[in-house]
Image 1: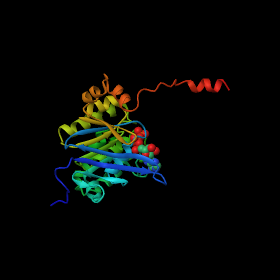
Image 2: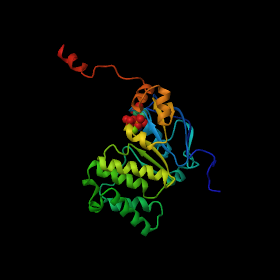
Image 3: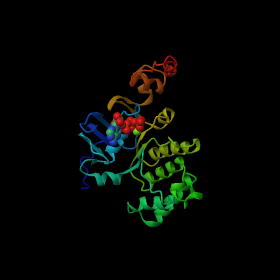
Image 4: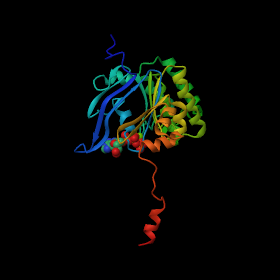
Length: 268
Ligand SMILES: Nc1ncnc2c1ncn2[C@@H]1O[C@H](COP(=O)(O)OP(=O)(O)OP(=O)(O)O)[C@@H](O)[C@H]1O
Ligand SMILES: [Mg+2]
């Protein structure tokens, strides 16, 4: 008995999840969101700014509690089995805290030590992850002196160092150079195809999502508006690309003249 609630549940499952923010719960970030992610799947969450992607990922990692509904990760209830959920997941958060006075080697060693990984294995993993991201030359420098993209690489490594079954990546390539983006793309493909990991990823970079995701959920204003493979989404929208399908599902293309603000100033 491992305390899992139901082995038949999806590797990640949300059932009617709501989340409201604000003093009077007036900001409805998620509105009865239900999803089921299969084991070994790379699942994408797409949606406009403010549509609830980061909120979903934070709920699934036990960082914040939903206002209503239930969710499970790796068979564990995110509300009542938070420790088991955290042990099952690696998380690249959107705005993570990072220990600036540590070096990457120290930081990754610290994260790994939270998960009882034997010391020699941990050291080897940290070395290999740093070399994957070409950071081995800087492994003993303090993180406070790292560029944004370099920090992002360390944070991706930190999400992987304990080799969890479920990995959440919130905007993984947003600060990365093309070479590092390619590494992440190949990494995610390999985690799914060769290591049987379940990956839950949110990104606005549509070609990346198209290439790595088995299925994608499109959300808008906290609600699920479409779900399927990329060809299914494109067909459902009656469009010819994922970008057009995204526009279709999230309120159509903007018709506002992007320079209208200039004439408003000139006429006063
Ligand atoms: N701590 C908070 N306090 C108040 N409102 C919040 C908080 N966090 C999120 N929200 C609100 O919840 C909604 C969803 O935000 P969320 O960060 O989940 O969006 P997102 O889809 O990740 O957007 P982006 O693409 O910009 O990262 C937004 O309206 C946002 O203002
Ligand atoms: Mg976000």
